[in-house]
Length: 77
Image 1 (spheres, helix red, strand yellow):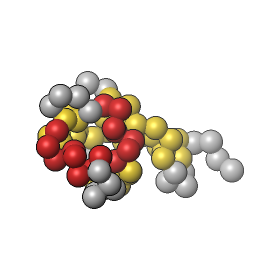
Image 2 (cartoon, rainbow, N blue to C red):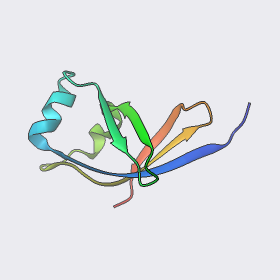
Image 3 (cartoon, helix red, strand yellow):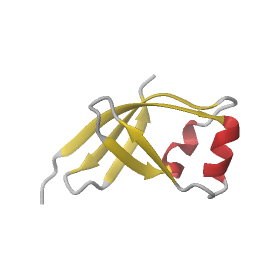
Image 4 (cartoon, one colour):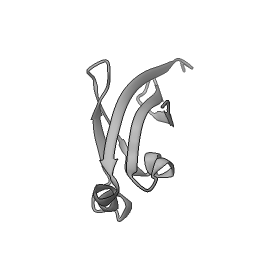
């Protein structure tokens, strides 16, 4: 089993009003295109801690293993 990790960066801009659909569970996943032009989908709950008065905005780093299992998402800026 490999311990290698994959890292991708993406920008996210979801308004507070739009994020309500994710928060309520109406929409469960977020699909983004990374800076490396790769499509990545992850549970909306992974960015819930970054929601502020305006929604979720910023550049994020997603880390996942070689089996595409999500390890973490962090806001970079």
